[in-house]
Image (cartoon, rainbow, N blue to C red; front, side):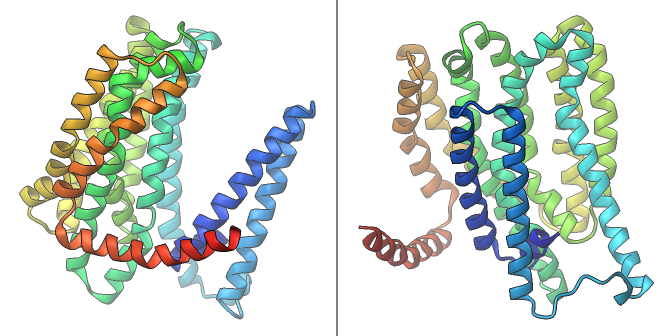
Length: 372
């Protein structure tokens, strides 16, 4: 709740600092606990303690930022609680449906094929889950921003948020997706072992295509939530979860774990490609052609050189180890970043980004000087 308040007042810098700090602490403690011979119980207690500490910091910051903040249930009228319930139950249903969509597949595989097959699916699914989380970290800020713009009556700016947010989501997801599609099987083979590469790689390909289209709609979901129009998101998630379960159970009999991935992909793609664009076009009035051109076309065209280079490297100069794999990806990144900078990002946007970096650079310089 406290970090929801921090997100609501748009202090993303605080969320980022706390997240980075406690992630580093958890990583260090994990290494220390496991290297000292302790097991899962100790690891669980460590996570409990760090999560509790994180929550206490959120409480401390909220009380400092909002003087007089009190938690008293009898302080507000029933009308206020009605508003909170009306908004939050739709959010709750939406996230429950989302959890079923993303995490029920392993249960289906475990029941119908056995626990040993779950690993092959989870390896590919976990990689796409990391991509999804990266994009989601960026788009979650659009919910409070959209609410603020609506309260101010600045409806035109909401359209701009939709266009730019969708474009930036694709810009972030495209290079990750291209690496997964072209070199994903090799990465899994180097990471987990050759026996996992082919099957887990096929799962990765199916789910990458699926999530590439869905992450582009994360901005849409967050805008609808910011406008309190996310009832459609909750309904879509529930329908998608049911369709996902039915299709996965049917297709697993003939296609194995690939059938589960396809069963996830079909309703997910239908929602991302048709349902969300339709509803957001009714809520936020915009030119659909401009939406496609500004948000989708430029990032996709910008990614073509990177895609071609990844295919060439994979077939002509494949990596023999993980260090070589990451080195190849790093060397190829300029073939993505330069076209994106000049084709996908407008001149006015480039000026803003450069100005923001210049303001940040002196701060970074001073901090590095202090460390030195």
